[in-house]
Image: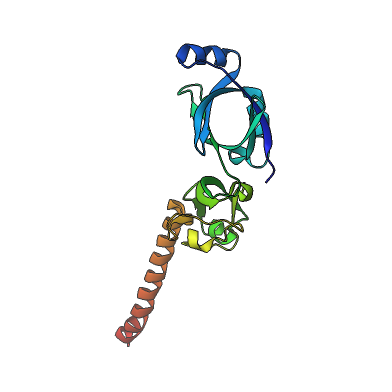
Length: 216
């Protein structure tokens, strides 16, 4: 995976007043740490960050974080958001070794149409929206794709059923449900109606010979 350049500035003073000033200038207070370096307080331009994360990697983009001419291979470790406006208010960048494994959260994407489930009045429900993945920064997947086309009513796709991208693994429980085929209330009601009808037919069939015997 190629690194995306993101230029940061340093020299910012710590404290809420300084952070508010930076945000007013459309900059985001941040810190970069990892691999034995002392945590370094920095700031990044909000627009530059948005552009750097606009590729397929999204939040898992491998960055080349440039600070005063020094470039740090880094990923986003944590993002803090404003509780109301939900815009980014602070970022933790983690310096990484591109050859060492890290654990990241990768988005889950479903593809295909489970026609057997839909025709039965059911629905496909993703039990999770992301999967924990162990990989090196150079092998970070942008997403985990699961094909639901062949799912039948009542089916469950578990983590063990998914083929993960080459060079990756997951620390999560292999029995963890990832996608389930649910039956809606309407579908269940239809099944109950069908069962009641079949039961009534069966009872009617048993009574017919008895009625004929009585008439004789």
